Amino acid sequence: GVKAWRGRPFSEEYFVIFLDGSFLFIRRIGVEKEPVYLALGIKHDGGRG
Image (cartoon, rainbow, N blue to C red; front, side, top):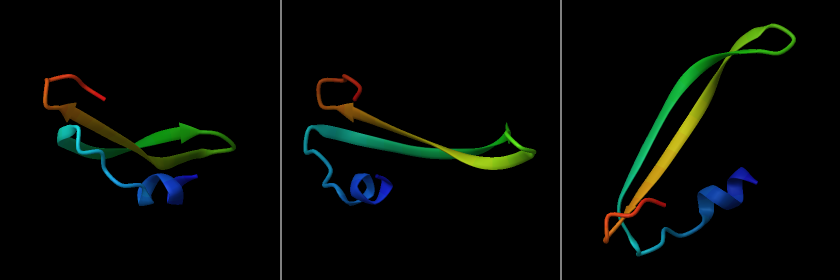
C-alpha cells in the first residue's frame, strides 16, 4: 500500500520530481474534505513518468 510506495527508492532516471496536493470536497455519506496528491517525474530526455 501507501507505506510501500512512500518507502521505495527514487529512480535515477528522473531529473525533476514535482509533488503537490490539494483538498477536495468528496461526497460519500456526507461531504468531507479529503487530500488528493499528485506526483510527476520529468526524465532527462524530457519525457514524463
